[in-house]
Image 1 (spheres, rainbow, N blue to C red):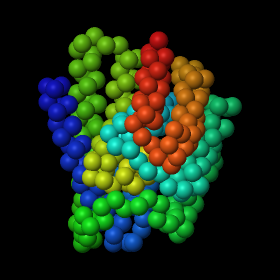
Image 2 (cartoon, rainbow, N blue to C red):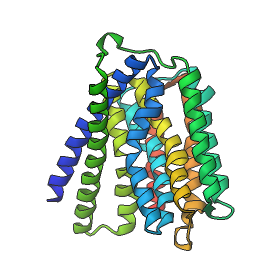
Image 3 (cartoon, helix red, strand yellow):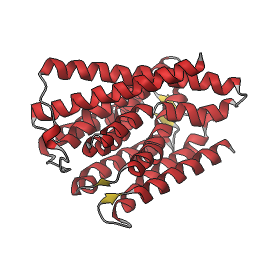
Image 4 (cartoon, one colour):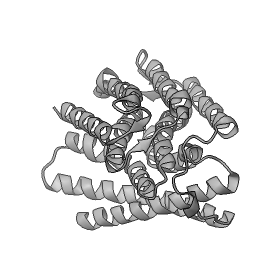
Length: 313
């Protein structure tokens, strides 16, 4: 049964990513908004749904530490694993808006999380409100001031869709990614337990990767269909959403506390998140300016393998 869940999950992820991409391109044309903005808003919000669901459920059940671990682990996986795999498959040309707006906002969000949680080990409700208000301000800025950030590689292939189809594809695509990731996580976890793999190994591999699978599916499909603006925007935007929306909303519901049994999150994991987030910027400029290529992808992927290995040990 585990194999059936895994196969079914993968199929749903591919279909969901395809539908979401169609909706994103259609919305970009309909509203005359740059695709990277759609990637950083609509697509990011849809692919961050698993993190939001897991975190809010955890908060309501009193397991607030899981909400923080979910976001930190997912942000590391988004950049080191998902961006790594994506750039190995196809290089991504990066425009000025990445280092002028997108990357700085991601770093600001990451540093806000660091300062809110490291010293008192709790994200208070007022801090959750600050995070969420920061997100709203960022979205307003994107929609009002962000110019075309990435050249549209294949504009002639873009399909203008009626609004009802855009909404339908968006809903079906988002649901497909969520359901696919749930099936894949459940199937993989069950299979791992049957094979005698420990809960710790399952936690740092299956679950943290699992909530990043929608981003991986959406990004790979975007790259294969030459919509690289959506791919890069999705990953940066997803990390911003994970901190400002997922943890912001969760903390508004109830203060998010890191308990004694999860101190590695603030003693180790959050530094990995900050380090990998920062490292993306120099990788954009070296060895070839304003491009992420397969060499960068290998560096990111190796860093993820090291992170997982050290966490397991």
